[in-house]
Image 1 (cartoon, rainbow, N blue to C red):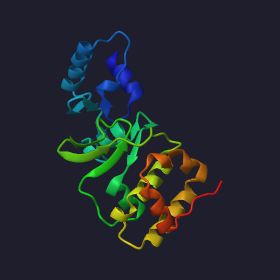
Image 2: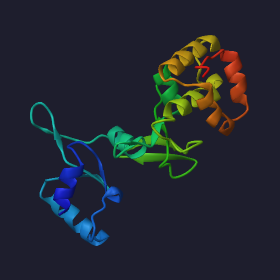
Image 3: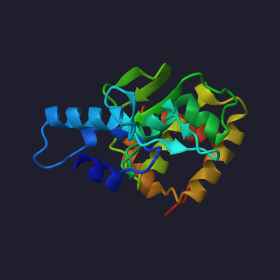
Length: 207
């Protein structure tokens, strides 16, 4: 029963979180028992407590080990195909081209953050997980990332603020970030964000 469920819902190399498994009539004790049987037989592998996976093979047919980054993405950013988070902080600034600093720890804002801010370790790799200002969805993720960048632009920026404004303006254009979308969330941010909008000269779609 468990094997069929896992094969139907997960592909090789995708983390399986025990908290996400829902099989009618199966108790937590039974789940642990069957997970151990599948692990002992080599059908699935245990990454760390509560995290399993079907091994994916490389071009030589050798099984590949699950990485901490993959687990973090599936746990805090795209949970079972649903958007629940995004890269934030210095990680986001670097990806956006606002900062050349490559952070030692990936920073993520997620609906599944266990606290306002918490440093977590996944298989000896550290992550900073933050609670977002609003529930993250596929529809609002680009707006929240945009506002996050502006909120701390003086901290992240390694170039002129006007150039940062150009980068963010292009991001707004590509993601159809409108004033109406901005107005839905901007009051959740500190007042200094208005100063950042003025100093960067950032533009977004007017309607």
